Image (cartoon, rainbow, N blue to C red):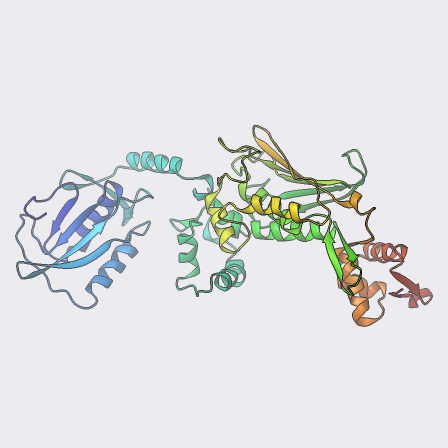
Length: 450
């Protein structure tokens, strides 16, 4: 290298005292085709050497990281040549351009570093944006104040550490940068959706709308309407809990066994995976629609913005892998919200195959810019079984009665976290199933197991 002289990918520096010039070369190599700095060699190729202490390499690596934006992590080492110590700094071409030093960006032209003009920076930034997925891009007008740092620190990071079984060594800001939810100290689109205080401030239709109908058609009476807002983790969790509370869970007593077998109306994994898939794979760049879930007596429909990508069809979806939002997908996978290896659909199909009541397989209806998945109820198959059909709320009441002997409407409201009318409806439902009975009179009314 020394005999070849300085080139587009080789730069000489006589000592570490020229740190600003070294950083200009780091920026230039990062923004061009990469390169190596040899320190301890003059511009003419004379071997000057340098003294390298215990912390020299570590200090230089830290200096480069602190003074490059986005941070550069070069390969740094020493080599003995002609009885003198030389230091090499190898820099790769950055995947995130431009790389700045002191608010300036440089490029390598021949054997020199040239400052990149404002026009070139804008052009380079546009080219880089085209390479990024939508969720990797900077969220316009967002600042670090738009991140819910309390959620990051007290909810997400403890969950991540528990599941990964390793303690986070970096700060929460560095972690979000590494996870591609922050760049240039600005949240990305994924950062706002996953950790934002109010994601709908930037993406107003990025929530789940759910409607529950009586009967099997939209024309039937609408029993309920909910909107699940907040960050994506909250949307998934709250929507899933609602689905569990408003779908049936039955119990079957097998002859010769004391314990009853619980059988859900819909596979629990399928419900959660389809909610998560909808959140994970929707086209957030298109804010003309939202995720819509419709619950009927005989089915649940999950409708989403964003059609199937090229090459993925309803037939091969279980064997194909595609992430419209790779940053969101990766982080959800890290905390077990989604199957990162693309095994989610395999497990949905398997759950249907092993379900005791053999539900119809899910139906996938793709369109040009949307997709609908339908899960089918097993309620109609309850008739031929000796089964008790209970909602999650009703099961909570039964379990409470087994432990405490009796329950009042006020206690039921507190137990379920519901209104007076809802508590009355659940208790009345259990009375009609002849599983509990009412006792007492007036304000002293309470309920016991039959």
